[in-house]
Length: 465
Image 1 (spheres, rainbow, N blue to C red):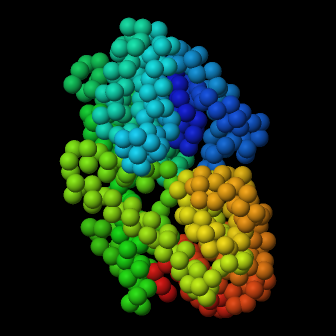
Image 2 (cartoon, rainbow, N blue to C red; image 1 turned 180 degrees about the vertical axis):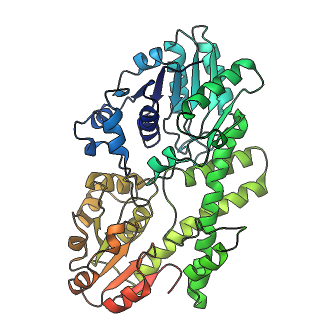
Image 3 (cartoon, helix red, strand yellow; image 1 turned 30 degrees about the horizontal axis):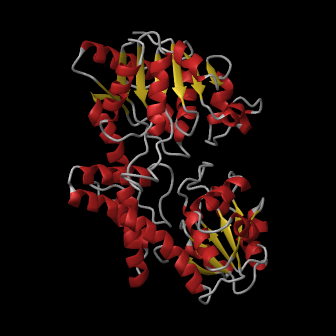
């Protein structure tokens, strides 16, 4: 089967960049990204590609190259589904906030809505690709819906999980470690569908980097990969607390551990904790799946990764208050960085949200600067927690346009996103414009010990210096 038209339902952090790269690498395939969020689609179609809704280094150039040629963004979902040979489902699968599995299980209502819409609209055979991160066996539910509510159309269901790191998504898409495709490899039709997707990626990905499995292995591999990565972060963060108590330096410990070829150096950077849309959601999903099969010890093991991450955020905020003479009431605290990591404007589960909420509990006045996150998003993130009224948040939290403005007359500054520009600030000038004694809390271990000592800050870093 030769794919001529691709539709992707969902124009978010996965769907938008993935389809842009596919369109760039496969100019003979028409790629249409659809979303019911009209405002988002308008932003993707903005004449100035710097205004597209997702910030990723290099993404705007790719969109500029392919948009209007074979890359299109639209709110006409039915038309795109009808035209497509292959449909990617890339909608949100948040953690459930209600009912059975509340707080752990993935909420699949958007997946089901997509499946029913695909079944209703489709008039010819199609390949449906799970791009969203889903619990194992979701493909079975998709197949049941598509086969029993449609127009007699034959559907093949594939699992093609994304392994993108926000901030390096374009690089990850153009030079992936692996492409994983799961399908019904026991039937000729299933093998044909798998090969059709292999052929799309083969335009730029070496054959040895494309891995095909059964659909269940593919679904579970995504959850497993995120769980393993998050586990490493929580492991080094657990060691960071011990380093602070013993006088060890967590960077030196991490370097020594990472030089072991069996372990390696990646994801051993101590910090205020991991955030983002994937790690916590996927681990909680893994915990729920394990519990549903009666695997209590397995569930407890993975849940501890989340417990450690939450502890790290609370511990950091608590240390800020303790260091500032056990009170931050009425004090100005500067927060540098709101995105959950550098080189993205994604704020989901960002450590900054929870640290700021903790400071608001202590009646602090918070001033925030992030180079890519807009003020309204910061307010929405805090309001979503529901622990403070919108009025209080907007009275106590101010968003400014420069780091220097955020830090002026502040009692303390906290680095919560590792943006490169924070390394290159004139820290001596910032120090001179702060109230003395001036405190610096480096939640990302961004600045070295010498820099801090030369400037004169009283400082605190995760894992000690």
